[in-house]
Image 1 (cartoon, rainbow, N blue to C red):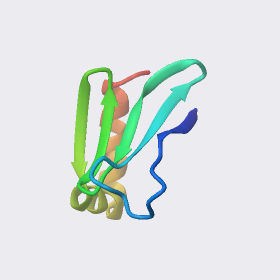
Image 2 (tube, helix red, strand yellow; image 1 turned 90 degrees about the vertical axis):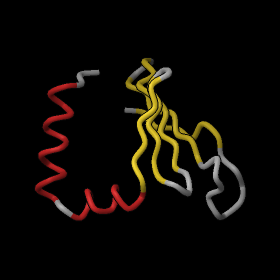
Image 3 (cartoon, helix red, strand yellow; image 1 turned 30 degrees about the horizontal axis):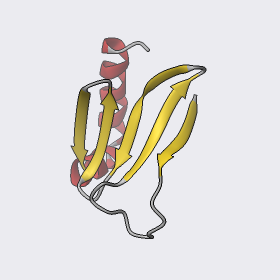
Image 4 (tube, rainbow, N blue to C red; image 1 turned 90 degrees about the horizontal axis):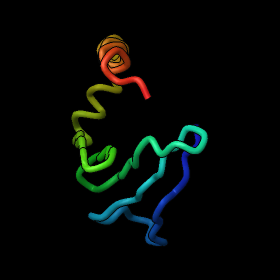
Length: 79
């Protein structure tokens, strides 16, 4: 998996447009991950999926729910 910064502002604070990372597996673009002041956005083609920081933090704090969510998602999505 290769993750690179697609765009990067020099400001220390994340602005509303955020920081964008390009995610690739070998030469295949899997999508872009954008971190903004509102949360995290996963972009794959024209499809955008958002999660707020509070929801992301809640998910990260519950290891069992995180593990279950990842299992469901891996079953539905195969790159």
